[in-house]
Image: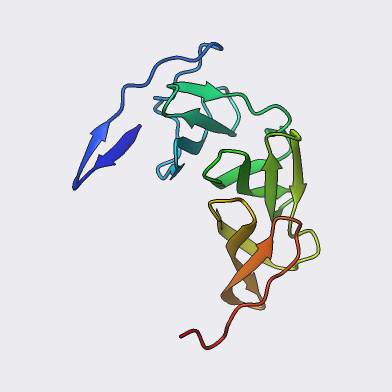
Length: 160
């Protein structure tokens, strides 16, 4: 895994977790997301693409029970600063949606099940209350902002 220290990247040699899974792998996402002490990324290290969370302070992978499913291709994960919420693009049955995983509840749910079109590149606020992502409805990419319950939030069209 590559981390940035100032203007020069460096490779982190991170340890194996209790499950024997190493963070360093030739099969990983090229753009992991970092928030506070957590790094979230996708990898196909165990034969199918999955999302992984790593705690930089404790130097260990964090279990994510109930997150990774064989029927969902996951991409572009982001994590809240406290590590509780992970947001990602999930593709099921050929349709992309934005999903939110709650580590405390160990539950994943779609935020965009009623939104027609494609979605991409979600990000989540530090406190996990707000999710922004790209959405393509009718051939034009726009930005959508939702709360973590899946309700769209208004966006100022003339920000100052």
